[in-house]
Length: 279
Image (cartoon, rainbow, N blue to C red; front, side, top):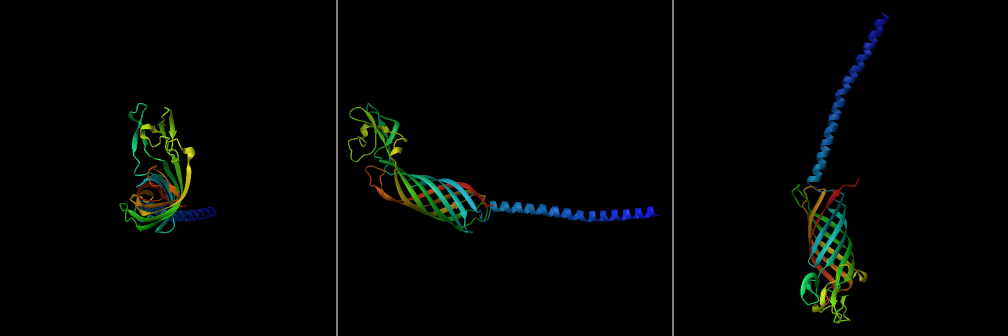
């Protein structure tokens, strides 16, 4: 009889445990299924955020090239989202200005015949480079409705400039028959710098760096930027606008042209990069 009671007791406990296990199993399966669906929905939401609709990424970094009406430049840019419509950005740019009168000519050899190995720019007094650092804002005008749309931003930007004047040297043959590298010197018109029949060719890009002259200045820019990237996490943009620059003294690029202290140009640029969210 005692054995019977023990068997009944063990059977009751086993049945209760089995019932609890049976009741828990559907809940665990349901929970796992729900979590899987949530992860899937989250991935879809992230994909949609990247592919289409409004861009709300917090950071972006890009680089590009700019063609100006008076030269060229390359730049890198870092953006920080301030609000839904406003992005603050920092930009570093390196540029060179060209005078519209610049034309390359052929140098002459010792016999007076022209050849093409060492072309030079006649009358060019200085190469003028600029290192620019500034801060600006992009203001959203129209966002992308879908992945095939174009985001349009107004941009306004300004900063400081360090102008770099590098003397332009040419190789000339003097009346004594000796070849020399000379730069433009208004106080020495007899150094053959402007005598084309004495010029053999350009002295080379490496000449003149030891004679750099630093000229501080300011610059400002306004324009429109069009970003056509299918994915919001990618930067693919074209920008058009105008740029103004002022320097602490007049800049001489050509020997026989008027020097300038203020520059104004139009530009078009292309840039590519990536966006992400801060963690």
